Length: 167
Image 1 (tube, rainbow, N blue to C red):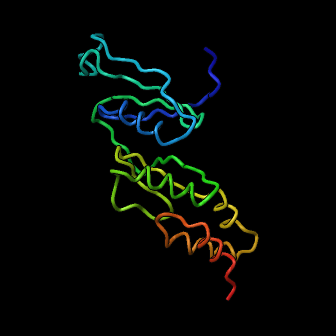
Image 2 (image 1 turned 45 degrees about the vertical axis):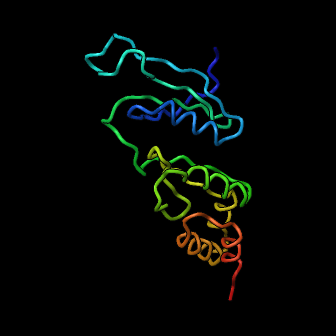
Image 3 (image 1 turned 60 degrees about the horizontal axis):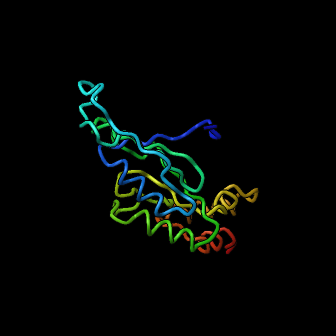
């Protein structure tokens, strides 16, 4: 097998890597689980996982490869790393926001960030956002940034309106 991606994110779960991977591939079109490996007896004194339980799940989300690993409770997800979902339309923003917040942190963070039911942080953003906040017109970019900082789920029309509001 030829590896076409040099870098593959690996997500460390306690024991629910397969459940998480199945959830993620159900959310993103063109996604699939490509391989599952299991713990054996070897190394049990180190990993303490039951032989036959899932070790890793390889999957793709819209063509991007990922690995999910059941590594135990030593490490948990935090906001220092997030996965960004770039959306072309408000309908996409709404769809991914709705799916990824199901069972997750009921208090979504600002600026399009959310935490899913597995503790993974995501940012659901319109692709237009960067253009709005990096406008050469400093006033326009400041207005867009001000609007962004007041939102949890991002609203493209409100971001545009704020950026274009010169009154």
